Length: 484
Image 1 (spheres, rainbow, N blue to C red):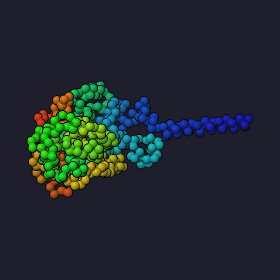
Image 2: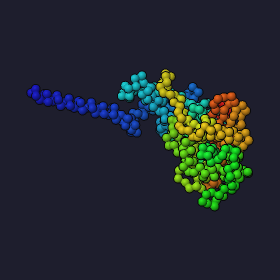
Image 3: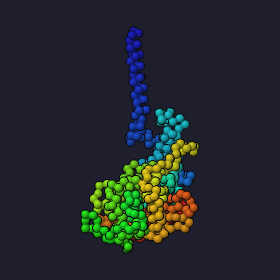
Image 4: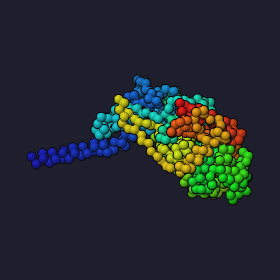
């Protein structure tokens, strides 16, 4: 009889071990799969069972939570929602989360192991902590200035600190109130349908997620490539460019809106934005050289995160010479986000170095203890230091005596480049007005800010006048706020 008892005991022990192993498999090794399964209702209930942590600007929360008393209990609230929507995104019980609400969701929802006193145990037990806070790099005054100046128009502003890569402003207009998407009621679905059905596309983040043809602002990149590849003998030497310029391999005549572009120097061509000069210089540099320089500024980077993912800015790497000529003046299929063009201006101001842009300064737990800090880093060297200094001089000339005089600021050195981007079938769409710039307060060692502005519905009559008239005043207000 004892033999059968022993066999039964061994069998039960084997079953117990198998049960423990299976429990370990489910609770430890496959936990992430079950947690992320859309059918797992418990994850959603847990996520909204407590208030989310906050997103902070200038040390003050621009988000909050309210107790709805429902099953998905705590709903997200936003202070000045439309102003900060391109930074925060939304957190919705029905439609998920975007931008910082998505990229930093583990911190905000309290599921990040770094928030726990004993991270290893929490990682195993999946215990939820009180939500942590996300401290942004955004400057409230800079954000407000950009939003106010763009109000009533479709467009975007990106502003960064050249020496560090800190993002000081991300603005997209028209905007929306992300708080209207929190909760589960009929009003939420109605708001969702209305926003997504709107022709003005208020939910798209034009500063980070939308790409545009950069037009003449791309001539900053072309000028850098021409100088670094020694295709011009200094900024004041004649370039030997005809006016008009016949695109290589075609009979198409490229002309200029400004006069005096025949055989113009790089300085003059930059100040009045001669298309012919920069198209010819792009061809002279060649496709591989132009592509390398564009990539060094950040074009064709699919992995740029701030920490939200930015749309990829494109400079084509497979073109004939006529297409290359058009790409060198920011047309053909060259596209860029406003953030990318702010990085271009920042690289010039920062003596040629492109800093990695970032939107989160640090994250803290519910008690204010810092658990992670963003480290500043250099992405690339876009151009030599000497080329950057020459471009600083050229961009300053645009503001003092060229097409960008509307961006001048007393008590500061300002460099800029205007641009108008043709688009639509046969270029019949209303041109986009661009302005990229940087500013350094007189006596300061470092530039304070680099800015890119795009206005979609600018009434542009000619290249660069529109950028100077529609976009430059916006950039000026943003730079003034940063300088203060």
